[in-house]
Amino acid sequence: MPKHNIGSADKFPVNKGVCVEVEGKRIAVFNTTGQYYAINDTCPHKGASLSEGAMNGMTVICPWHGAEVDVRTGMAGPPSPGPVQYYEVSSSGTELFLEI
Image 1 (cartoon, rainbow, N blue to C red):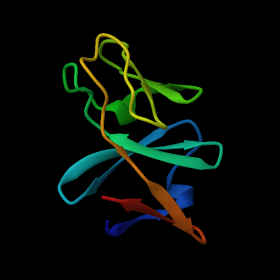
Image 2 (image 1 turned 45 degrees about the horizontal axis):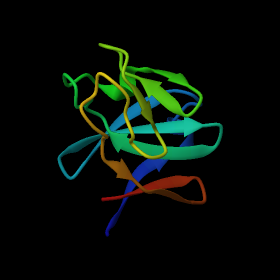
Image 3 (image 1 turned 30 degrees about the horizontal axis):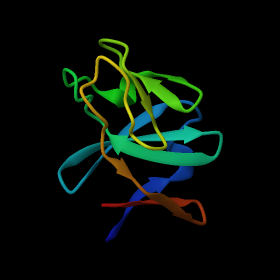
């Protein structure tokens, strides 16, 4: 899988989601105290932007209907009908890369 540079690590604040676009896909990137995770930005329930949701530990809470999504795996709870796609994040120095 090709790696895409998504920018410097300081672009991704702790316990916040940041939406990036790679290969036409909207992807939410989360910094959980120095560990970076990426999932599709769109909640499968009704299409809300997960990067706008509040973080609670290793989960992001959908801002529209409260579905909790594990940022490490993409597994989602109700009312989501299923998981979201997870992507690998790696780093080189201060730059982050996403595998699509």
